[in-house]
Amino acid sequence: MMLREELPKIITASLPGPKAAEIIEKRSKYIPNAIRCAYPVVMERAEGAMIEDVDGNMFLDWIGGVGVLNIGHCEPEVVEAVKRQSEKYFHGMFNVVTHKGYVDLAEKICEIAPVNGNEKKAYFVNSGAEADENAVKIAKAYTGRPNIIVFSGAFHGRTLLTMQMTSKKAYAIGMGPFPSGVFRAQFPYYYRKPEGMPKDSLCEYYIDTIKEVFEQCAPADTIAAIVVEPLQGEGGFIPAPIEWIRRVRELCDEHGILLIADEVQSGFCRTGKMFASGYWKEAGVLPDIIATAKSIAAGVPLGAIVASKEIMDAPAGGTIGGTFGGNALACAAALKTIEIMERDDLAGRSLKMGETIMKRYCEIMEKYECVGDVRGLGAMIGIEFVKDKESKQPDSELTSGIIKRCAEKGLLVEGAGTYNNVIRFLGPLVMTDEQLEAGLDIFESVIGELS
Image 1 (cartoon, helix red, strand yellow):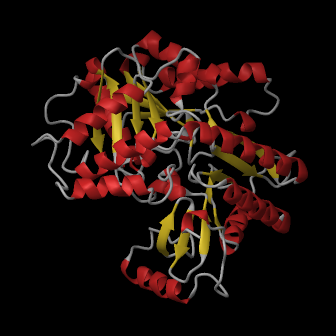
Image 2 (cartoon, rainbow, N blue to C red):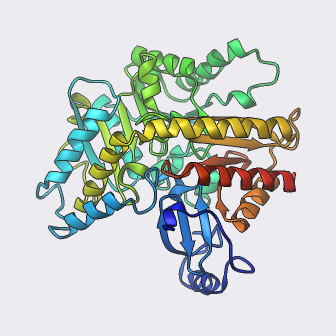
């Protein structure tokens, strides 16, 4: 049987196995401790949704390189596309020479990205953090304004600016001082709404926190952009409510502020649409800029920024671009990845998987007092663990125990959330129905065992 069709299977007496343990020990000698080894897995090869480690253990991957592998590990057509490109040339800096793959990919991204404007332009960087940072640079260039607004629970990266944009300061210990001009409002985390607040008051309550930034921190006419994740990733897989997004768009239009959608984790079919802001579009709302990365190129480093021609042409010459941005191998991978996603309807597959997962997670929530909430879009789903349903007190200890025990049974899952009490589903959309059911069985058995 091919690896991509296997089911999880642990054959060593313990994890890591002997070969993996040796490599992990060597890792600790040469790699900084701050880059943690979260799982006892040393990859030997990977296909689809499966990873085989150096000891022959088989793991079902529900992390997907943290949202990078929507199309799965080592998709053969993408491998072939990268091989073909590698035989022509690896690299030619796009600020110096033109290569066709970059131009073709920019055209494709402009075609599929739901952003404001009749004519669009796009360019490429190396990562999600770079995409977010460049989106902010462009917004400042276009508006001539110095400040931005971000949200509680936000994660935007680990560069100096994006560390400041990111809410959770555990990602920024000892790294300051940080850039000025970044102000924070409250993201609409309805599950943890103020006690006693009626549901029909929630949207305006959270909108008022943006208005408070205007009043207390920086006047509206100094704000270049409001940066929103359509579905918060590290913050706990919290979808931005559509009624709230409508009001944010209205505020932006009223004050000449650009709306930036951070689609680094939510893009490329993960939520049941090519971009999660496709749901905004259905509600009559479009962002002005989309910043994206992760699953765009099936594991080859690439990020993208797309906006209208007017916005994109605002920066002065030389202020955007970079050596490796839009590398030829990455563009070849991305073009083939998007082609397969459209041809094989991975957005539809995401919706189907999401239905299966949500049904099972809701059954688990009914059954166990430790599950407080289940939420998401398509196959981007979070399950939140609490001490009990009434208090909603986060249970980070149980969450980390579930993650560890799942790995011991051959299922790789990852945590998230402001309180480290959410487990997210980011598994490849190409996993088989049998693999999905096997993973759900393991996951539920572990919850039953540890709760």
